[in-house]
Image (tube, rainbow, N blue to C red; front, side, top):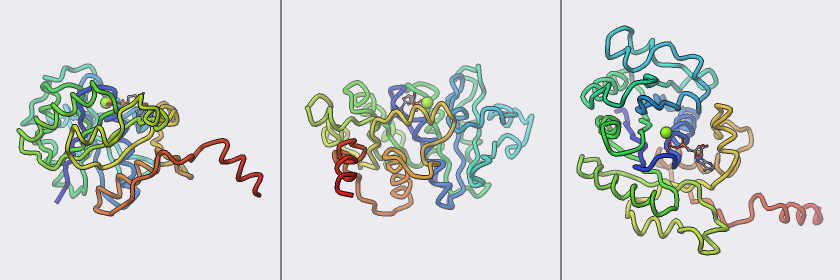
Length: 266
Ligand code: ADP
Ligand code: MG
């Protein structure tokens, strides 16, 4: 059976598309056949994060209009044969597709024996959200440790439950451990206490994420994984049912002083 996972948040700009791109790639690296679906009609950018923007010929709307077959619209990743992208149409309103149409599309993808369909949700809780959750049987809720994002995540969790999606799990993105220690940022525990859904993972705030976004190369492709890349890779393993301990983000991983100390010790 194909697992259809919507990546959602409520608030925009918290890292849904970043998570979709990295988790899609990380699952594909673990021999899963993965289709990532951009449900952000009008503001698509999953193609950019994956570096596939120049290879788009058709979009989801062309499939629905029967102007092309599904397999013609699916963009294959050059680096990772297990991964394909179904692009959203650019310059269209979120009303250009209905939840029923989205379900039809995703059912078609599922027929094609994919292990995972990851649906990248647009911001908000209007039509675009309803489209993105229409076919989902699991959800990943992404939030940053900020009160406005957490409140929107809480709202979305309620809407997911109301739509019978009960297995929602949480990613806390852009954590800054030093700020948490100084009590200037909510801790993961604070966020979990409010949202009360199981924790899937925590991603540190890291400018390498922005660089990878701009390059169209998900962090999980790095030869030597950075902490954020490792965090994404661990989340993919948890999605596959492995028990993977959470990384201690408070440990001085990249700390220059730790490196100097190691140097002096030889
Ligand atoms: P959304 O899809 O929820 O709108 P994006 O995935 O597009 O959010 O991310 C919004 C911005 O935040 C992007 O510029 C991205 O590079 C940046 N970003 C996301 N996660 C992180 C992180 N862990 N550390 C630093 N920047 C991040
Ligand atoms: Mg996005």
